[in-house]
Image (cartoon, rainbow, N blue to C red):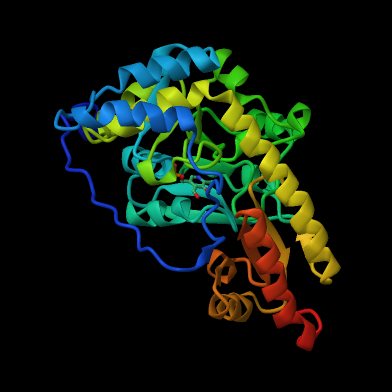
Length: 361
Ligand SMILES: Cc1ncc(COP(=O)(O)O)c(C=O)c1O
């Protein structure tokens, strides 16, 4: 593996960023959040922890790492925690990229891979999706001696599609050991066809050296506003990342909530089931409006439309925020995150009133 000397020798301290969220009287179907809210167990645990926030967090997040390690059957040294999994994308680019290094990623995937690569002076090698899905053969073929990282978003945001276990196994065979495969599994808990989904945790347990898995509490666990993500990887890689992270990157409430949320299987199941029902209902309604829905496995749907930018603007006028995907390199697609049932009903009414006079945009 290729390491930067100044990071291996770093006694790092960096101040955390302040993140504010605007509030708006809109129905927000644009950020793939859990509309059911956080786990009640996590909320109760945070209430108990509130009086202690005059103290710094545990900078090693030891309790949370231990809990995650036990939950997933890994050694604790194979786990790191972060201020959202987005921070891990940043840290990976910070820790691995030198100017001009190449990063292979899909064209039409989570935008942070591209932004953070460019920020570090890296070269993004974007491989077009095939049938809205990562084209793993083409991605393997895009690897050169300058490639350092390969991002695989599975399931993919924003299309919701997955790559199968067989496809990913083939990719693992083709990627040289010097290239780090970053498998972003932010939506893994929503996947229903688990038998066909790659079991990369087992791959790590078997000792694969060039693989890291990114996970988050922001999606099914409903803790997006707390900022809590985590990664699993080989001890050597995780130790390296730990050196490059800000000292107190995971706050006290996030650590407390994460530990409690992992025990709340009822909330997890309820959220998964709600998502499944929403996917079925919304897909049927959208298809009834003459739209084509990309089959997916997540808490959002990608839908083909004629003009995604114009449609998103019209929906916004009617009080609904969705994501138009032209800016993600996928013109003609919108992404609708699941909200509450009454919001879905009103959304379909609004969409229908826009589409009917024009007969299917
Ligand atoms: C694929 C993917 N990875 C990572 C993230 C970032 O999640 P977090 O809120 O944990 O930073 C998102 C958020 O939308 C995502 O869709």
